Image (cartoon, rainbow, N blue to C red; front, side, top):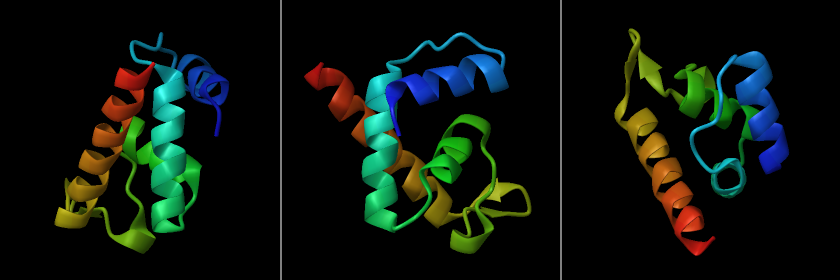
Length: 86
């Protein structure tokens, strides 16, 4: 996943202007996808839209599970690592 893809998704599909570093976000998502052996787009949807990922149980009754919260926190940590290195 590239920063341009993230930026385009935020602008076109969500109708918003990105406030964060899209390149750092793309790197964090790619790292986490490799770590979890999961689809990058689904992780992006989880982080940006809070869209559930049923196969790895990120939500239960509309709320984050412990696993979902852990994934989101790791994504955020990775994002801040990449952002600080730029």
